[in-house]
Image (cartoon, rainbow, N blue to C red; front, side, top):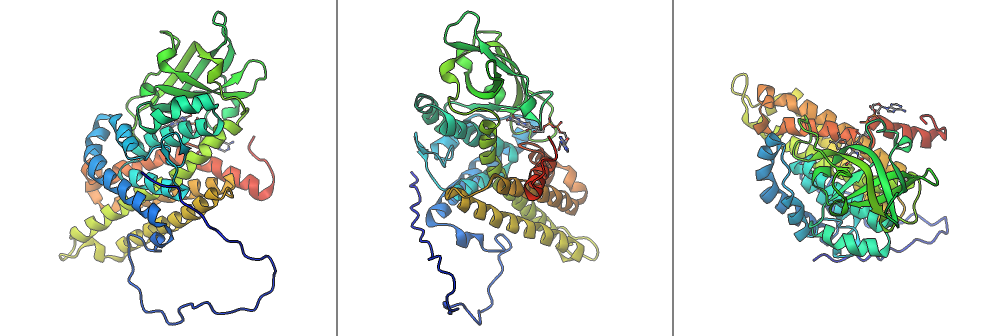
Amino acid sequence: MYQSILRNATRRSPSAIRPVCARGYAAHATPQPFNWEDPLNAQSLFTEEELAISETAEAYCQERMLPRVLQAYRDEHYDKKILEEMGELGLLGATIQGYDCAGVSNVASGLITKAVERVDSGYRSGMSVQSSLVMGGIDEFGTQEQKEKFLPKMAKGKLLGAFGLTEPNHGSDPGSMEATAKPHPTKKGYLSLSGSKTWITNSPIADVLLVWAKHHETGKIRGFLVERSECPPGTLETPPIKDKNGLRASLTGMIHMDECPVPEANMFPGVEGLRGPFTCLNSARYGIAWGITGALEDCISRARSYALERKQFKGNPLAKYQLVQKKLADATTDAAFGTLACVQVGRLKDKGEAASEMISMIKRQNCDRALQNARVLQEIFGGNAVSDEYGIGRHVANLFVTSVYEGQSDIHSLILGRAITGIQGFY
Ligand SMILES: Cc1cc2nc3c(=O)[nH]c(=O)nc-3n(C[C@H](O)[C@H](O)[C@H](O)COP(=O)(O)OP(=O)(O)OC[C@H]3O[C@@H](n4cnc5c(N)ncnc54)[C@H](O)[C@@H]3O)c2cc1C
């Protein structure tokens, strides 16, 4: 359905000193209208293809997802058909080339996550795990057989993935994980995986679980594709974690492995240590940075509509009061800046020039600003903010989670601090 973007970038001559010459910059520009929904005209930076993909994703999310989310959130229910619907539209694993994936630019994939998270961060989480963490991991590190076996079905949402890194005793510090892979005592050509993972998105319904565990010979972390249908009873349990107070439209669970037999052919061959999981996480963190700008924009839109309609003191709409206007101005500025930063990192990612610290920077900044602004915008709704029908409380609860997972905000500041000073300060 979607074509790869052809890039015909030309490089300027490195020769240094050239005379300054005018290139037709508008000296006396006519006043331009201000679009509060896209204040810095990010749209002008997208290709025709990216705009078309964005329109498809936004239309699907608003027409098909939005009507389901309130009840799903109340019931703590995740409809796994959503991934199939996304698969039909080519939205899963969208940057992967081949294997029935769309092969679009990183900016286009960011626009998809933004459309999904405008509805709900939980729906985006389910998609990110499928697309970036599991499909992305297989595409980056899998064997040809693994790619052919898993990617086409995952692209269609027929096979669901989960990514098991976090353990009950090791969250921010996954290098200390306890899960192990040893030779299986009875099955030749198999490894035996034991250990527990927690807070794992999609785990209760996943067909294939990308689990990270330490290999018995080297003590190094390796990636394993655990297929639920191949696990004998009692060797793999994935109980849900219920009664969450955020991300309730997404399914979260644990992974318990008790001498779970996994064929050696299901291990990623060439990657050892934290490079494996961190590469997958980088791609997902980039998506989160985009996604939460969608959630923040939805908060702005809801708060603006409410402030224009609600009248207090002499029949004035709340929107007339300057303290309310400041809240909208702050949030709109952060959403616009956050989007432009994502576009820049996305373009660099397409050229293979994005440092992982750039992704830490936009993940941390966009998540922190979205959470802070959403909390402030919530105030505009007064008592009505407490009703879930206004949608703002759901975003606030979700945005707390997005600032915690895939590297809590402070952990990303430590990564940046290390890069800025050259001093490794936290482990
Ligand atoms: C809804 C949800 C879905 C999730 N989905 C997944 C998933 O699909 N797969 C997966 O593997 N994981 C998943 N996670 C786990 C998530 O990535 C972890 O919760 C996160 O990495 C933080 O780990 P922790 O909760 O153990 O917190 P901890 O590591 O215990 O940290 C607690 C606090 O201490 C701070 N801290 C820790 N170390 C330091 C330090 N050295 N210096 C300063 N401060 C520090 C942290 O910043 C944080 O504020 C999910 C979590 C949630 C809530």
